Length: 327
Image 1: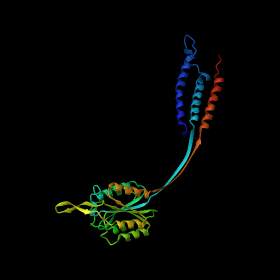
Image 2: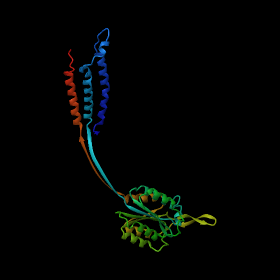
Image 3: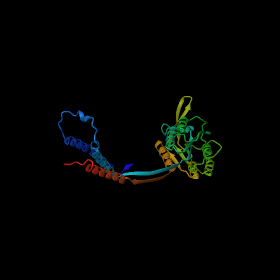
Image 4: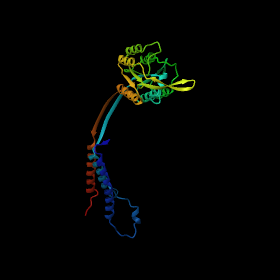
């Protein structure tokens, strides 16, 4: 039950002075009679009129309350809502080769990619998401799952040196496609993130893209790295040393992979750009939600008005018949 004009309910505060006035007038109107003792009257039964003495005021107060409810317009609502969500399947293919330790993104390309991808994962609770990592080889870090807390923990465990160094883009993409190709989801997506050129593996990136296209899988390719020279840490017998290297990779292949599969290519030159890329992908691959709503409100004020009228009529009848006062 709701009220269309709830502000009128403040009128109920008028009951306080009404009750105060009634009690005051009741004591003022009491008649007095001096007698030697009222002991003989204490056990005498009270008549029906005495028991009903306050009934008119009670009926009038209840009638006032119901009148206030009437002008506040009580309404009963009937509503139902059905919601169906359709998640999509997403495989993340993440490059963990040595060049991903370059520090043009902070703290480095690999850690920045992990952090932003984790934010992306946690923002899509209805999707099946999995993770493939690759360098010189490729393996599945996590198959498709809706347990995103577990996936986020597995992301934290990803680090350079887990597998042989190199950049097998084709192998990483093919592994991701293999993990998602049998999915029953209407939308299947691979997000491929790398900063290098394919130099390892038996599968060419374009061949892997053709396989993805044949299964109706879209590939969003993200090239990571700023323009110009970048510092890359290198392990030497003297400890970690930094080398200045050109930030170059095979952008043309990544663009072709994305175009072949109906996806898009993006270049992430810093942390903010990488975050905005994932936000853009999030909007393009938004989870579909179909909602049906029904709402109907019925006016209920007439019931309160009728009850108030009956109470006020009852008060008038009782006051002018049973409890009629003769001057």
